[in-house]
Image (cartoon, rainbow over all chains, first blue to last red; front, side, top):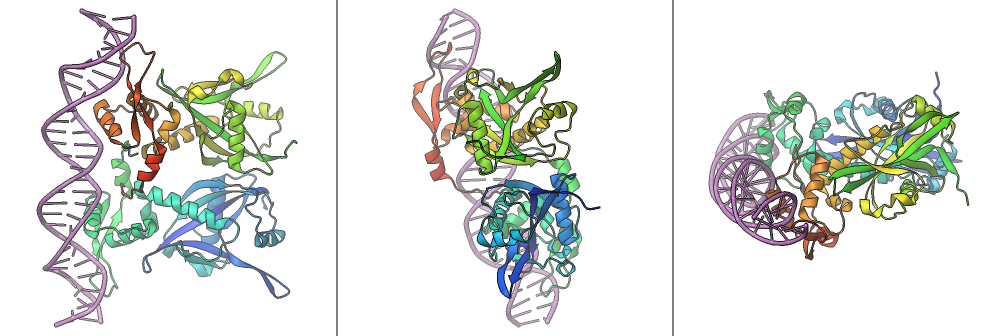
Length: 243
Length: 243
DNA sequence: GCAAAAGTGTTCGTCGTACACCCATGC
DNA sequence: GCATGGGTGTACGACGAACACTTTTGC
């Protein structure tokens, strides 16, 4: 059954993944391409998104949009901001594009970001020409989506300092150095390995496994996992005022 | 000139104020009252809010709504979440109310909260029967606004720990104990006065004035002010990972 | 002079930070 | 055997936490 779209309200999804090889925090974008009489009118990338249906919640829209792009459900998501400037879709290319789509010129979008494991996404399986791009080196991005990506990234930077969401971006079994690389990528800082290692290993919810890396060409590193159960049990609100 | 409303998108404003006498963090709500044949159909409180106009940004809508309620401009505001469940306005009373208003049943609202000085608001001057209520003791609240208030409050709790927004809720000249009372009210915790006092006084952007309280019946306290200039100059991002 | 709130110091423990070298492994 | 990244220990300083009494003022 076809559902009824709300034409002036959409959800856009910033999908973050981490490439442990290139040590790069990436965003998943889809190709936007349009030509007419062999002239290329639009050729850039945008976030994945869609209209909200009449009978679904915003969270459901986001979940649906992500699943359509990646096939994945139950990923960490956060609604972080609504974007609704009257002129947010008013660039020349965007106007050309919108003519071909069932879009309202004054559309408000509720933006979410997702954190997932890059390896879980099979880019060949989807029809959108989706591609990963480093947050620090984005291609040409349509609509106001560059701004949306950067605001998502800012939110992520703050949130990863106080909540263990970083592990959503890593494989279930990871090395300490991978965690460090990820923090360094997200925050654009250098971290002292000895201090970081000690800090992490001392956490009770970082559990050393009876396993080491396999298939690496150097000394294989100890693997760890994150226990959400233990974290939740230990967790207590910290009221430290640091202004 | 009358502007064109977007019928399915609104902005709702959670207005926070602090009562230094009762030491209570308050929310400003407006009366919702409807009777028919002397029967009271609706009698509760709601947030102030309004439709977004076709040609204004969401921030502008929020600013306009606040000004209409309080006469105040340039107050601290934060867009914190969009609420869009299909059934968010579907309580019995809400349905009765909506019949009398130009409301779309499926309306998405972008929620903001404002922080302002209670003394700046003159409740007698407005036409909405607005009233302050303690966050910890809300009256009957219509729509899904209770939930919106609580989510705003949660966001405020987190944000006041890392940013000096607390001073938006206090008079320009305040005592150390007033700041402490405010933190205690917001966070529902007890703070040691000696430690708190030392901590605050050591901040360079907390400036002791050549003034003391007047008109108090006990020992008048030293007054301080917050210097945003000094704060901004000193400010540097803190990348402390505390997970 | 008394009630009420303002204001004051010290000790301890935790944790963040700075810093340089050896070790285990695969090739 | 050697290159590569994995892994380790110590000392210092800052700051949060716990804790109880004196002082100042208005009435």
